[in-house]
Image (cartoon, rainbow, N blue to C red; front, side, top):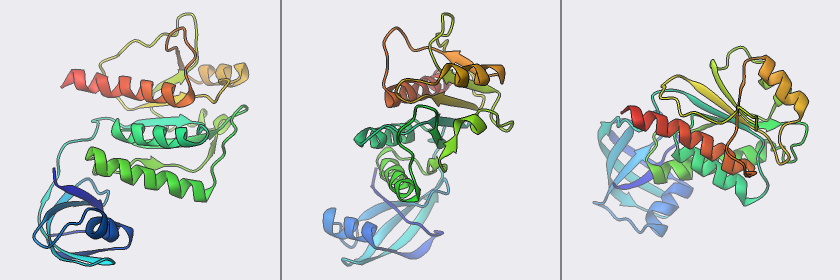
Length: 237
């Protein structure tokens, strides 16, 4: 696969230019030169194969020669709602959910959550999405939603019918369902959801699912459940 670069503008066959950080990365870090082939994407689901015409430190001129629409997305919408963990663990969470094909990440505010990202943090999350998409080949960007209260989120009537709540229960082990239905996964913070939060969600149709006898970190639980959904799609292919 050619080197991939993100461009935040419409693309079409013909001349275009990259500026800013991506131009610096292409010309200075990757040391690509005129005549080299690259792949551009802007989050619209397609990728744009181009050849470098001129590579400067601040601007790179390219010629887009063809457009392709490879099938790299899940055939159903997958949403993950989770309080962000502390430090570098948040970056790991975002990167892996992007790689697994999650469509939307909803940072949650719960009774026990600690990290409540503002606009600046949200911008950093979106940059991590772009970097992960460049690496894994996704051409649709994972959407990062604003910080959302769990009390209002779990009651939304526009959520998919298939809703998983990561919370241990005697009969709450995950069964891998081979289904391509839209779904949403909710994971609690360190310490988990409160019993009141769980009871309210269950009364609204959320299905409690457990992930074994060990206590998993927030990002581990979210990534594991997202991977189970992605695997269910792989088994259907």
